[in-house]
Length: 115
Length: 112
Image (cartoon, rainbow over all chains, first blue to last red; front, side):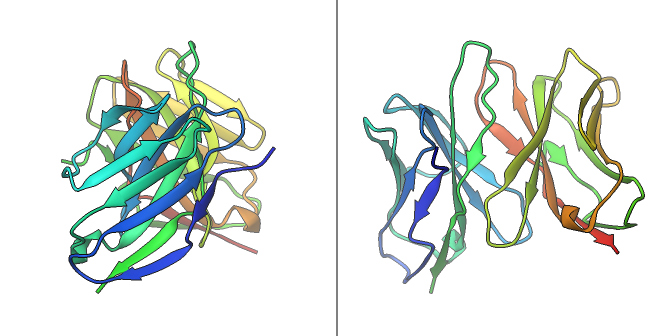
């Protein structure tokens, strides 16, 4: 059983550019969530996808968008990058079950730096 | 508005002693709570969880206590080991949602 993987591990972009981050869910998981973790802060929920549909969204502007594919892998796209977008982006996969217990398993993250 | 607060940014404990990490929350709709551990250059690792219908959950050296009236939870690690040195995050989820709210983390250092 493979864990959650993310690519790339590090990325440097300039203001105004667009970026796509990728995540492969843990085998058997049907839900993926994306988080932004700024330095010294806890992860902040961006959005969650379940069966290729957005299932909930945090307080992030529309220039943050996502996709989930039939194999449950996922992308996070950020348009018109701003300096404050510099952060660690974490992907977490889980199995949405009837019990409601869906502990999330995190990938190692992608460190994005916007110059 | 920080709905989940970890007021101690750091904690140092001697090996073999008890580590107690604290977390407070403000949203009475939270019904599920988790603790995650994070090492540098890795994603957070799930440690232990507790539902609001319980006040205690134990897993080996780790015990989580929930005091709903005080809106407070704590993680006890006994005995603490040097490998426990990491940043610990508490997280909470409101009933009917799948959005987890994280605290800012507490850096635990276990001294050999």
